[in-house]
Length: 156
Image (cartoon, rainbow, N blue to C red; front, side, top):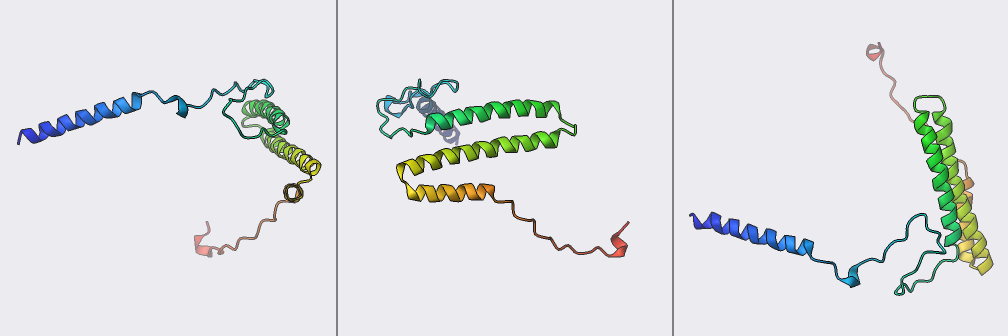
């Protein structure tokens, strides 16, 4: 009877040792990711690893610039929102945040649409035009919800 708990304890210790060895083992060089450039690095300065074979999208520098501008605007508005907590400025700041996000989305879609037109990609042109139309469409009207009318005995 004594040997069974001892054997289980020994087996558990060996498993823990093996798990620690596996977790602590260095990752082979073939499985590591290349270093990521800092967020504030200009896209033209970023280096592409020699093993990268995918074509670079010519629009990415412009899209990155639009996204950086959006991040800055959102950071400013978020700071203002924190300071305005509990005041009547909150709804206006929330609307402005939404406008910034929608404006960036529109700018990126328009940039992609112009590129699709330049390259003659009619399928992309049609898809992007539909996306812009959907962005411009007014939000759907809320549907009325039917609720049961409480009986007089439940009213206070």
